Length: 143
Image (cartoon, rainbow, N blue to C red; front, top):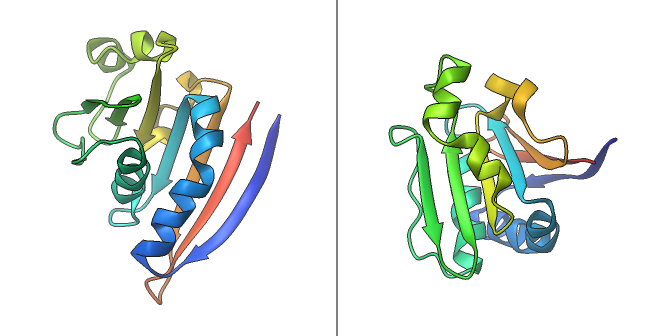
């Protein structure tokens, strides 16, 4: 079942931090968050805002590493599918093992590149950057 739970326009970094804090408990319960949006839309910044809430001091983009793992109050897997070409690469980076880790939360940037393998139960965050440089976050629950 799919339901949009929030659609909000964000104009400042502080508002993005507040959004991450407001969604933190729901995100923890779902364990998988997908993030989609154009380059520069704020996907990594949103993950950074969430991770800071749980004691992760520094979050960097996983574009080149493909996966960053942060261990603090929560174990956070931060993945980027942008440079992946085949399903085999998902096995190579340990994606399916991460899906089974009940102690971890996955954030997947560019998740729509392999949407057929995404966990059915997840939160999807789509970020649209408009002509005024405002970000429109659409948050959808899949259960």
